[in-house]
Amino acid sequence: MNDYRILVVDDEEDLCEILKFNLENEGYEVDTANSAEEALKMDIASYHLLLLDVMMGEISGFKMASLLKKDKKTAQIPIIFITAKDTENDTVTGLNLGADDYISKPFSLREVAARIKAVLRRTRQGETKHVQEQIAYKTLILDITKKKVCINGEETPLTKKEFEILLLLLQNKGRVFSREDILNRIWSNEVYVLDRTIDVNITRLRKKIGIYGKCIVTRLGYGYCFETE
Image (cartoon, rainbow, N blue to C red; front, side, top):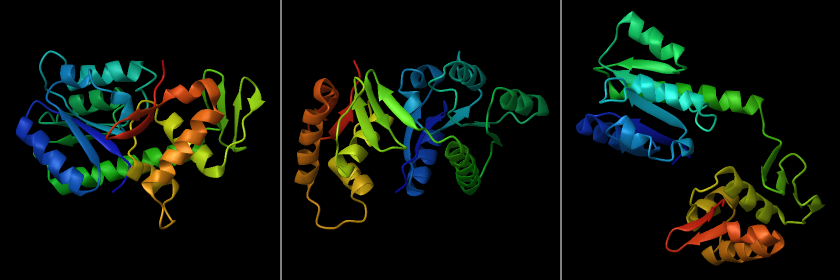
């Protein structure tokens, strides 16, 4: 299983389900929406790639893409248009809106999977060229390069695991990570690590980051997330 989340937006429910089924078999986490209006109510910033149909209701795929590109929270999310429209003008329109690729119906599922892999690979390469050195929430600053955390300008000593947990949660504010998710990401190469280990590290981390400890929220039955006010 990889870590990529994909949102499929198409008014053909059957097609959405087919894409969801096949892309999940490829290891992606996939959600669907049957209109742009429905999709725009979702946390689009949490997705790594969007598959957008062009011909949809009042808000077309082109219009939705335009809205997303104007919002700095979603402007960098890769977009692949999937549509029955395949004229040169439509393709140019999509690409001018900032789309990363354009697939015409009918298409093969293998083609869609290949195009997605190519776009995500390009995106990942682009991200590595601009490595984020710091991530912050209010006066809580996590220095990724120096591996240290400061609150109100004063360093707060964390263990390696505590630092990595905080980094994971801060980089994905609002996203819930199960204990299994955290174990796989932070303790990936270690054996005999118990779920209780996560709870102990979270408890210590909350105490060390003081007033920001309350931001690390427990979602009973699901896991943990960093929730902003």
